[in-house]
Amino acid sequence: MTGQPVPVIIDCDTGVDDALALLFAVRHPGLDLRAVTCVAGNTDVDGVVRNTLTVLEQAGAPDIPVARGAARPLIEPARSAKHVHGADGMGDLGLPDPARTPADVDAVTLLHREILASPRPVTLIPTAPLTNIALLLRTHPEVTRNIERIVFMGGAVATGNATPVAEFNVWHDPEAAAVLLTAGVPITMYGLDVFTQVVVDGPDVHRLRASSDPGTRLAGELLAHRPTAVGEDPEAEEAGGLGDAGAVCAVADPQGITTRRLPVEVSLAPGPSRGQTIVDLRPRHGESEIHEGSREQALVDVALAVDAERYVKLYLETVARP
Image (cartoon, rainbow, N blue to C red; front, side):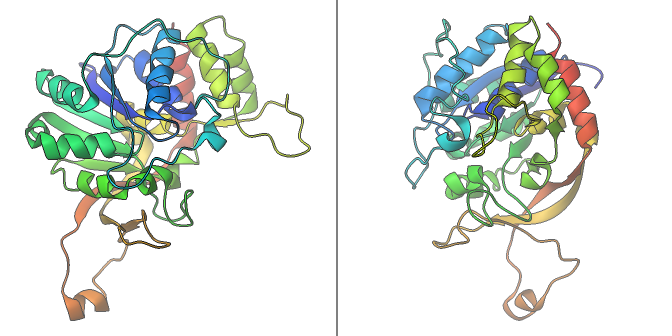
């Protein structure tokens, strides 16, 4: 990446892999992290705020404003992923409470302020349920004039994780995801299809964990976190997926993903398909459109492939920066 750093704002539910994303964003010279907003998802929103402030502190980040956002989805109750991210949302690593404090405004107010104040259009990177983003777009639609692109971690073309077809962030607040698709700005979907492919191997994780730098070491500890299988040595080191951090890599190095501009919609109906991102890969209309007419659908740059080795190398080089 050349020229001026890209101004970015991350909206997150920190979370192990959201923390990995923050560590990367703080240390990549091509990114200017202007603010972080927090939403309920992997853990409760107050835990997300605490975790976010801790990560920024451990990374030695400048005084980046952090704001508390929505405590629950627009319609559904909050449903955490503590079984994946630990009781504290951060792998139960026993990290100290942060000395930093959040901003004295809510997430939507901070998003509105920082987007319009940026001298260059901002790239929004939501790595969480999209509740804050939906509230922003409905409350302050004028912000879109200073948004370059939204690169969100969410959705899936093929297999889900929250359900057989729905990815967690979209499933957690499907209505908010549907609002995002109406934003009227370019959107990139970094979904599970590429999310699962970018994995740091065991020796590199071990090297990060041995670092004397707190932020680099934290990246290694987070990568090493995962539920231990029955009968497995709990001390065994394992490879770790970058997860949400891959979406931030895609902003720093967009050439690392292969995308196609495709119609996408979110299933909002009750039942087993709720929260599914329906991505239309067909080369031409089918009988449904022929007989019933076509419906307007958002066109999204959907990530279908990723150069995993490239992003792992980029991540390791970046988080090792003091």
